[in-house]
Amino acid sequence: MARRLVDAGAAAVMPLGSPIGSNRGVRTKELVEIIVREIKIPVIVDAGLGAPSDACLCMEFGCAAVLVNTAIAIADDPVGMAGAFGDAVKAGRLAFISGLSDSASAARASSPLVGFLRDDTEG
Image (cartoon, rainbow, N blue to C red):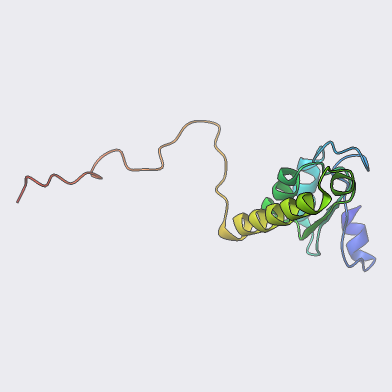
């Protein structure tokens, strides 16, 4: 469907994170990741984001933006919550631009196992 929207001239695609107003987070994570990877117009996750970490996650896998309402509107401190979402979006975007590493199914050392300590007693 996203490809059809692109072909029809859409300026952006806006998949749901989860049901609108539910604050359930990004229940459509794999779908959104595929859309980001496969289309070349902005992807904006709309609906269901309940915590700043949800917004950060969307930005980490390449979304152009997120749209948040309920989580901010019903917070005890809406201004503070809006600030938290703003910071999360910035952090997620910076992580994406910086190049997150791929996950692995098994442990792997990221530091060399030998030759990284220098023996100062050798002249």
